[in-house]
Image (cartoon, helix red, strand yellow):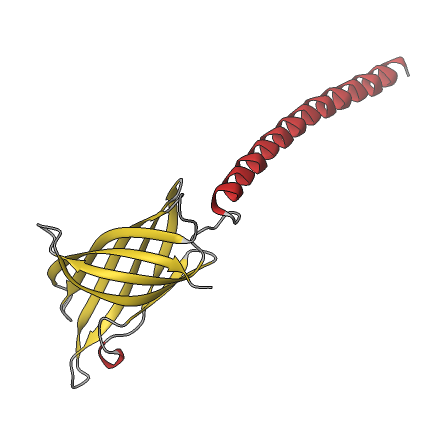
Length: 179
């Protein structure tokens, strides 16, 4: 009986000790969560919205540039939609719709107000023959001073139908949120 009583007390003491340890870990985790919420609040104040600042549809002005000199070659409008979960769509006026599919791609948060996106579209000639595809890659910087705007810079890799890279072009973008 004495032995059973000691085992019961020892088990109870161990249980209390474990509960005390887990309670401390839980309080510590709550403190971390509160700090995260406070950081999110700061971002909300900066951007006027919470979390996924890039999400939504944007009116974009694409400027194709000479990669060596940076000189503008031409500018055209585009719509880009960044969806929850990291997918995106791009529709361009730079090429007639009969000659290009909408771009489909992905985006991610890099750091601070910087994001990256990449999309692919398929191209066709005037007779409807498949001529290859383009992969566009950009780094986006959301403006701190002008909420609801971004600027980006990147490349467009043009591929032949057999998958050979034909050339790489450069472009910059300025955008305003479509609301």
